[in-house]
Image 1 (cartoon, helix red, strand yellow):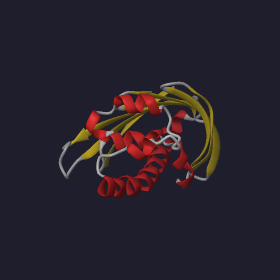
Image 2 (image 1 turned 90 degrees about the horizontal axis):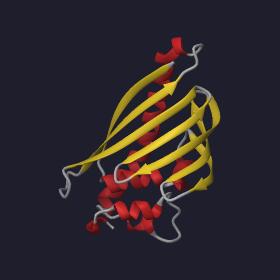
Image 3 (image 1 turned 45 degrees about the horizontal axis):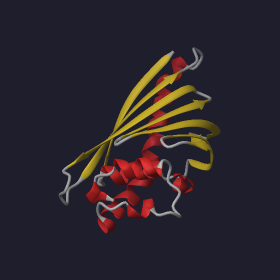
Image 4 (image 1 turned 90 degrees about the vertical axis):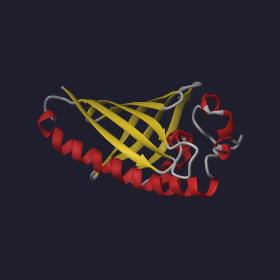
Length: 179
């Protein structure tokens, strides 16, 4: 049974910095509810990886299909114990080129819940929203500090030694003054 909900996140960082954060799997271990990521395969805009995540007190190893749709969308299809889940995140930059630049991230989540879990959808949504808030708060400090110190640049993400998913597609999606 299909279950959907939306979240809008606000981050004081450029679209390029927010997208780079989504594509940077190296930082996942710093998140309290995520870790042990293993990339199984990667093409120019799609990847498949496993990731251990925690929802409430329970830890799961999930299989993720991750797609970058330049310049502003990430689609994450997850085979999870809750059922197949698709999370689409679209980043919109606001007040570009000003000291007040920030991004709004619209996150649309759709889960195909088993009939047995459908009566618990409100509880599951609360758990997923809480997990999302935790991850956002952990990322927000990094992203906002990075924006204050480095501004719009994402050059460090594009270094040869930095592993960033879909690096060339990301580089191509950037405006010339941002790289």
